[in-house]
Image (cartoon, rainbow, N blue to C red; front, side):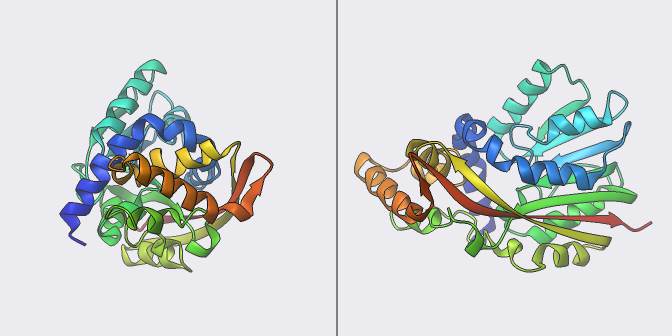
Amino acid sequence: MDARLQRRVQRYGWDKAQAHYESYWARQLRPAQERLLEMARLQSGESVVDIAAGTGLVTFPAAEAVGPKGRVVATDLSDKMVETLRDGAAERSLPNVSAERMDAEELKLGDGEFDVALDALGLMYTPDWDKAIAEMHRVLRPGGRAVAAVWGARKNCGWAEIFPIVEARVKSDVCPLFFMLGNGSALADAFGRAGFDAVTEDRLSVTLDYASADDALGAAFAGGPVALAYSRFDDEMREGAHADYLESIADYKEGAGYKIPGEFVVVAGVRAG
């Protein structure tokens, strides 16, 4: 797939998803985000870059951890996400947070500028994740720390059929290798290729708990990576896609809701120096 097209799909797709993202995903993603922050070992006064920051679910806890003497620069490809993040920082009175629209593969930041680089569930969407991880390495000072989280192996993510269901109706061009970094030691190996030392990996098994079919459908279609393609569906296409997706997660139905298995991989490394 053409890298420029994939970036456009991601940029405008997350613009579409922004309004629904936190309501459907904040609770579901918390285990990965909390583990990422634990592995980052943030200290008061440190300088942090949060890449693919979305609405700030990692940015704001990071800002509190580094305190007023520290700073967090949040980046995202989506204009809507950046606007939401800026508004959130203002509402929380966090002057040590700034947000800019940037491509993860080409950060407009200085060499060795940060103590810590974070990327919570953004690398799967980059056309060249080796380049994105190399950028994390570049912007860190010697001894700086990087932590990234991705979704795990496809077989361990019960919601994974969303991609072929959408592709059967509208070519979505969404992250064709979405689960690749979650296989085996792929993410840890990528950290090693970028030059990181002391690479560690943690794999988390989780349950995505949805109270109703509407919640499960909203998260899958409106609040996530297929939002742009979904916006092109007519009523008949939506009805068929909803039915197919609910059938794909039928084994996880409990009462009126669904408990869908998921997996995250979190990797940390240190820039040598």
